[in-house]
Length: 117
Image (tube, rainbow, N blue to C red; front, top):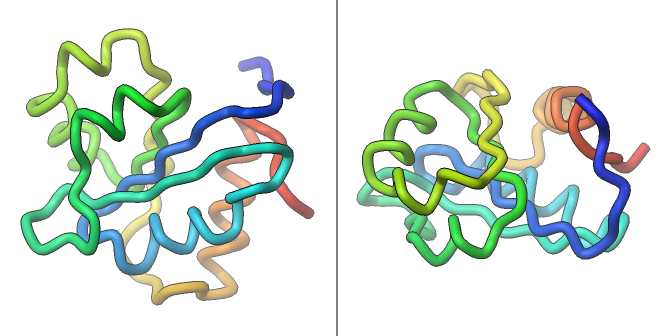
């Protein structure tokens, strides 16, 4: 897949509770290369719960697990039709800003867009 190199790309990162994985991704990618980044969660108790507005706003949607793809597809099928929805396959095994999580995020996201060193 060709990497996007345009500025002002809007990235949405989604996990379950928006406390560790997606929030870490938001912190490390926001502002880099002109990216606008938001994060949200799919569960009721999420810090920020994903909405149709988040989906409509984003250019790329990176989810952490297959269950997040399923949840978004069930809830926002129409809005997702022309979006790039990418599953990163990152399990809920990491805390906020965990060094290993940061390395995994950069490695997996770098397949699609430019990432910070």
